[in-house]
Image 1: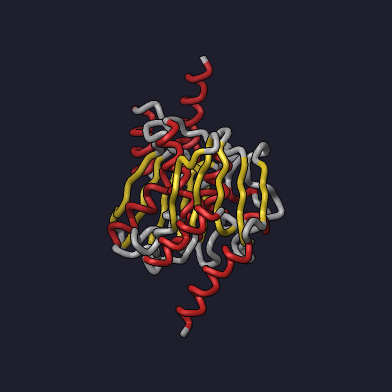
Image 2 (image 1 turned 30 degrees about the horizontal axis):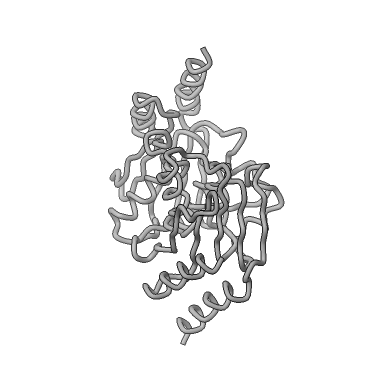
Length: 138
Length: 138
């Protein structure tokens, strides 16, 4: 999660909403990404989406079996839907997303085999985001 | 929708699941896309996702206000989530997606201002998909 936080910091440096993600397979980081929605003018450029594309490119196949996503904030519906298609083995996230987080849906949209772990370094993951919005509102 | 069906045909020609999408603004097609998940080895390469990215690129902004998406099949959770972020004005789809369609969720995930029209050329949109899977199973 510390590596995902480094990615969030990279987003912050670009004045993007600071969310970062990495994907690990066999104890190795195979994808790193951070939110680039402003830079790319593209609502689909969330950290998780880019990490999925990048990891699939590394693997040479579109399914992320035996892969773990670490992301600083709980994935939204779009990213959860993408993660479902990828059949990723495990998702570890930091802070919860209390408005658009996938866990707010009453029905599961992830792949049934995907394991979910939440709350890892949640305070750090939330702080970088809160500080960003606090500054923006000034 | 006939233009979206042409895009679905392009996907079929590449042995991709035949789903096509276009985005219209001011009576002009500003984006065309078809499913490329196999070609790009990427589960996020749905027709709608590419159309969103392409339309935002055309507009030079990430919000698709006053735009209409025409897509041959009902969008999945991922695409619906992306469409929600885009704040697109209208979604018109052909055939319903009875397993992963966004309308199967009990909670709305689209932007509250997005209008949805379904069933346009539904038979044609479904037929190209059914024929594809029927051939695959042979």
